[in-house]
Structure formats: structure tokens, C-alpha cells
Image 1 (tube, helix red, strand yellow):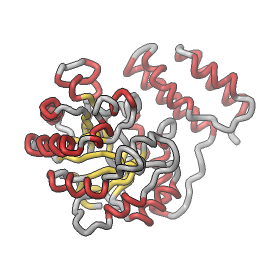
Image 2 (tube, rainbow, N blue to C red):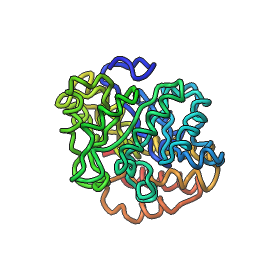
Image 3 (cartoon, rainbow, N blue to C red):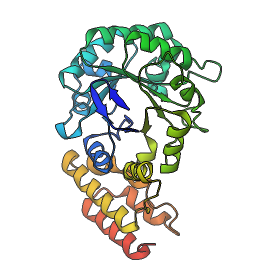
Image 4 (cartoon, rainbow, N blue to C red):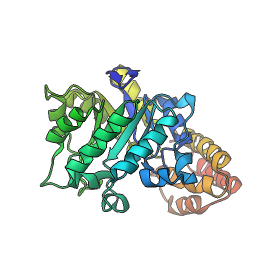
Length: 327
């Protein structure tokens, strides 16, 4: 790939997507351990940040072992976004990323995230002002457009490049699609093959297997791939994808014992970092993504996801191991 901002990256780099209540320090470090090349914080509200909300500031804390890493901010008020970018810069990430892609109603319907796709002049103004203000590289993450009738990404990519951004991540859906249907990478490929585009183009959407990651690199020529939902409960996907890209062979899936040990480690670390009950509550989204396909697992799953005691949860993990074993 060469450079993203000031960061040298290997060929076909893998990025961990910024995900609220998922991409915390623990999960980021786990994904990096498995082979993620570039990490992002959870996305940060510019309004909350400039009010110095403690929970928001905590989301931005990064460690040297996480580098390279970007801090992502969102909002729809130019002055607030510029101020937030300045605050984020003080924490010395490797770049500042602007979120023009989040589709959730509480953000988009208030004009933030993908809501900015309904106001392109303001979107460009925010981008340009942040680029002018901070010394760090600035990148953008966005979607194809607001809906099927307003896929603006081809022209928008050139306009954003003209604003001075140094990288662009594109999710292959419109905001109206949310996460339904299949991600459409054809426009991402069209942008990558646009001779006027000189910045790295990172593709995002539906990367949930090594084969799919390799196919997107090969078919669309993107400079990197970002993995989001495919990593929830399965940070090991980065190791699987990297191995497949380098060898053309698939790693064997994690055994049940390996899944359990991974979850134990994540739960114990989460409790150490966040305390109780927050440490376990935070892990429920990851636990819910494991053990699919096990017969008669419903009652155990319910008990596992309702449990808020680490010792009892470990006993449930033992019960899963004893009942199902490796298969």
C-alpha cells in the first residue's frame, strides 16, 4: 500500500473499523495481536468532546502498543468539529478520521455521520477546515450516498481529495440500507481506478471471510480493507485473512476450546479494565457471536448472556466445553 498519512503500511493492509462500544483498547489490542495493521478508536462525538465529557475522553485514550491508530470524530457543526479535532490531536494519534458514514438514527437524523451526505457543502467545509487546522493527516470514512437516488461518492471522492484528505474509506452501502442487503463494491472499484484519485482507497462492507477479503483486493484493487462487524466476537478473523492473503490457504477454524479460551481472556481483561458489571456487559456482544451451530444451545446461550458474575460465567464456559467438546 505504501503510506497512509505518515504511516508506512504493508501490501494489502487490514484495518479495524471504529465501532461504538466495540473498538475499545482491549479489543483493539486483541485484533492487533491477530494481525490488524491499523486501528481506530470508537467514534467520538465532537459536541461531547468539547464539553469534556469523561466517558468520551476515556474513549480516546490510546497506548503506544496500539500504533498505528487513528481517532475518529463525528458531528455537523464546523466549529465543534474543528475544536474536537484539535483536542484529539493533542493525544497524538497517527491521524484524525472524520466519520461521515455512521447510519444509526440518533446520529444520522441529527445531521452527523452519514447524515452529512445530505449536506455536501457543509461536509466539504468541515473537512477543509479540519485539514487546515490540524497538523496531523486527516482521512474520511463515508458511504455511497444517502439513498439509492443519491449515490454521490464518485464525485465526492474527488472533492474530498481536493480538500486535502490523505485517505478515504468507503462502506459499500447507502445510509438508507443501514446494514441490510449486500455491500456494493463496484463504485469503490470505480473510484480506485479513477486516474485523478491519488489518495489510498480503503474498502469496507461485508468482509467476513478470508476468501471475501482476497476477492475484494483482487477484483477492485483497493489499497486496504476495513473489517467491522466480521470481527465482533471473532478478532481471529485478522489472522485468518492475513494467512490466506499470504499463502492462499485457509487456517483451520478455532476449536471450541480455543473459542472459550479467547472469550475467557477477553472477559477477564474487560472486567479488570471496566470493573463490574460493565466489564461483562461490554462482552455480551462478543459472546453472542460465538457458538453458532451448536445443537440445543439456546438455554446455555441465555444463561451466558444474562450472567453478570465472572466466576459463574467461567462455570458456564466449563459447562459448554464439557457438553460439546471440540468438534
